[in-house]
Length: 340
Image (cartoon, rainbow, N blue to C red; front, side, top):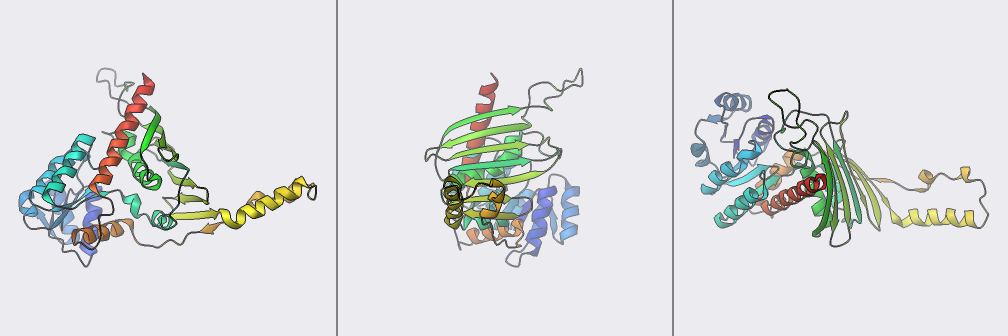
């Protein structure tokens, strides 16, 4: 294994790669030799000054460079027939993402996309329920981190939830409505003020699927607090999930529905006249989902190694990453059309 890119995410990947028994970390590469040397020294590996030299010695790489460089680095790795785990988003645009996918297919090489929320313990616990959602609501807001400010909040933050929603809905998107605001905007060199145009900092999108499912997604990188929550409504259950706290709960229709109907029937018959005797929350039985403590990055790398070695299909395939980027582009297009 090799790691390309020694920024924040690259160093995290380097740490996890150095700890996995099934992986031999050959080395790291970064355009900044100082960053590469620092990461190599910290995790007991080698800093490569030449990327091709690293690629000639590995079976797989973790690509954690800025999104704008994903295409060129991925193509260079695929030329060496090296499997790639590429940080999200797969590419800055659908054309580049499709080129990565098609090149990997021709080369017969595995490409996995780093949609880390797929490996969040709460998400994995929810996946075991096989929920058939009718409505999905997602909120992902946080203060500005000053990272990834070259792209809008849709590709920077909402892309996580786009991937999860597409997987949950398991259907084709037929309509997208979106609104967004660019607050920071582009800098005016003369006045020092922000222009009205630029990458969006806040976005709300409503996705309608062919199977009738509707998803409402909100993302903001200018909030005063951090909140990352997912709520799923289905005919059989309601699931609430907190990405940040890695916590999930489910309220199932069975049992709960009969108790609520019984209370309503007693009200209608006049048996209950004092409504203060009833508390809806007391009638609903909540079940906390069992959550494991496996680190998402570790679970992601384990899945990648499994796919590279042929033990299981790729968990988040290049095609999944392409679909997420295509949907993100459609959301931004709908947002811009709304502003005209």
